Length: 227
Image (cartoon, rainbow, N blue to C red; front, side, top):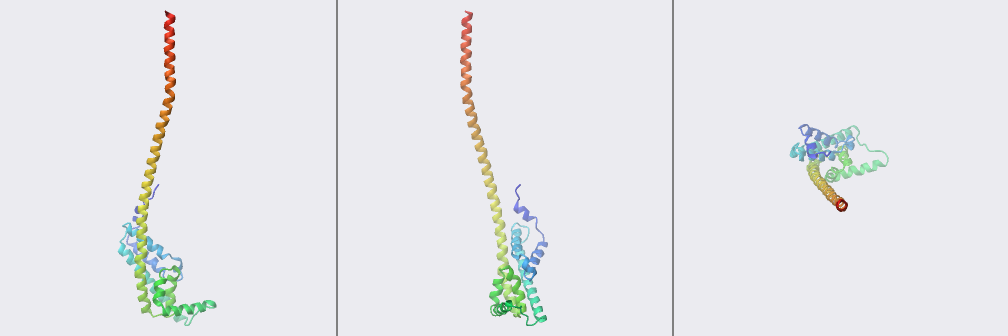
C-alpha cells in the first residue's frame, strides 16, 4: 500500500503547530537541552507541512524566526545570570584556556560568531549562553542574533518546501514507472500466450489431418469390401 505523502502532511494542520514549532526551535537555542533538540529538522518539517497546504508558509517562517530569536535571548539571559552569580568563572584545566580564547573572540567577532553559530547544532545552543557569560553587550548580541535568525529561518523552512515538492514529484514518478512496468508485464504475458497457443495449434493440425486421411482410407476400404 502506497502512502500519499501530501495527504499525510495535510493531517498535521492547525494553529497549534506554530506554537509547537516555535517552542522546539526556541528550546534548541538554550544549552544544555538545546544540544538534544533538532531545531533544523523541526523547521524543515514545518516547511514541508506548509507546502502541503496545512499551514501558512509566512506564519511558519515567522514562528521559526520568533522561536529562534526568543530562545537565543533566553540563552543569553541565562548566561548573564550565571556570570553575576559566578563572576570571573572559567572552566578548569585546558578548557580554561579555550574558554578565555573563545570569550575574547566572541567579544571581538560577535557578528561572525552569532551568524555562523546559527547553522551548527552545538554552537546554536552554546553561543547565546557564552555571550551572556562573557558579558557581550546585549544590544549588539540581540541585533546580530535577529539578523542571523532572519537569514536562517526562511532558508531552512524553504528546504522543507522543496523536500515536500520533491517527494510529491518522486511519488508521481514512481507511480508512472509502476504503471509502465505493469503494462509491460501484461504485454509480455499476452504475447507469450499467443505464441504458446500458436505452437500448440501447429502441433495439433498434423495429427488432425492424419486422422482424416486414415478415416478416408478406412471408409474407401470398407466400401470396396462391400462391393
